[in-house]
Amino acid sequence: MTTGQSERAELNIFIVDDHEIVRTGLKLLLAQWPNIKLVGEASNGQEVLDLADSSTADIVLMDVAMPIMDGIEATDKLLSKHKNMKVIMLTSKGDEGTILAALSSGASGYCLKDVSPQRLYNGMQCVLKGDLWLDSEIASVIIRSFPKNAN
Image 1 (cartoon, rainbow, N blue to C red):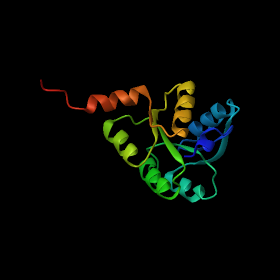
Image 2: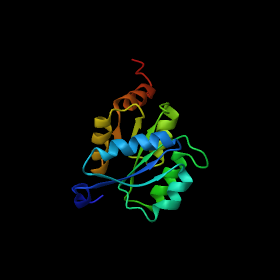
Image 3: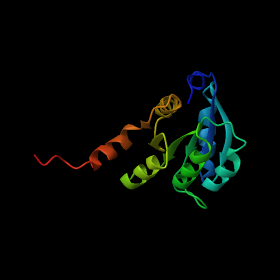
């Protein structure tokens, strides 16, 4: 991502979640932040791929477990075609295998749906600048997965 893009006043967000109530809640949250603009929403991974060509999204907030196409496969396919988009997995799945699969698919961030609004906002800013962002709970899962030193 170019420096000019990370300094833009407006951040374009696309929401992908199969639960309408989650999408509605996220839209209400995003509307509270003046520099955030919702540019699209989808209810599954295939739908976001169908809509991505006409989207100006900087960041896609992507659920993992969805019908038709899950968020991990969708992230992999989305980012292979749209190199400048960033994906943050926003999900209820916090197991090690899912986290590692999502990061391997190209996700730039990962957090659980119980993340605080401020942490999500800060995470989006980190990802926009090109950083990898793991919410602290997710980082703990990854750290615990490393083998303990046998000394």
